[in-house]
Length: 100
Image (cartoon, rainbow, N blue to C red; front, side, top):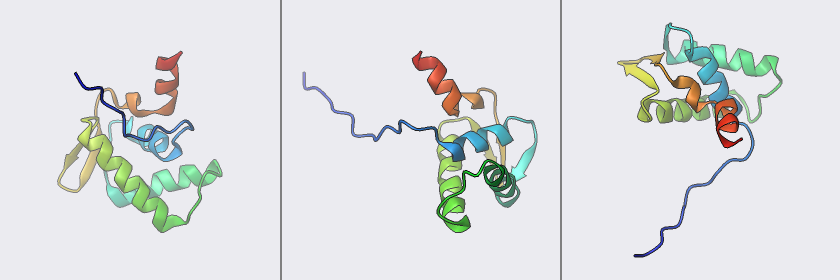
């Protein structure tokens, strides 16, 4: 049996964008992407965790949101998004707790 190699890159630092998406989507509201991004962007600015400019951050947030949809943690209905039960599994704090 051949051994398989992991080709995925593993981030060792907390992912602030995903953490903010999880934090905002944990409440039971439904968001359009622009409204969701504005909340995430404001939260990141308050924490001084914004880098690379707003447009680059918008692209990163959209990519991370689509990953959450693919993983089944966020429901996409047309152009609206809603966090589902278990979305906290995507946060860095949850991953750190699982490792220890």
